[in-house]
Image (cartoon, rainbow, N blue to C red; front, side, top):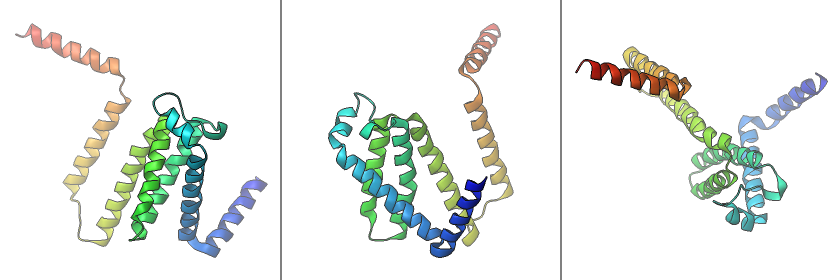
Length: 176
């Protein structure tokens, strides 16, 4: 409990001193430098691991390596969109993608589309708030219905679909 209180006070002081954008900028520099240093030190291991074995640089766990790389991507994209002449930062994002694939971190690979969906949703929410971009109630209900169907498909197990398909196939053949 004491460690949590001290951490919260430290975060409060940090945010008061440099602000949220400063924290994001610090995270961007730290994560990007960390990935580039790690790849620079173990480039031969990275190249050798693609398709052959999991990339585990400096004896780190491959999943944690993938998590480190996937968390750097949003900070890099944020920085590239905030700084007009700094699009070369996207090369660091490409390096992060290579690290994720080489590490074969399924959790990180799954986190990419989820993170992208959240980023697009935040962008659309911001756009809807500050412009004439609007969504009608019927469109909103339709989108929510699609999300519900998608969630049901994801949650359902494959045998359920096979059984339903077999059942429908038998009924269809019986009525012919």
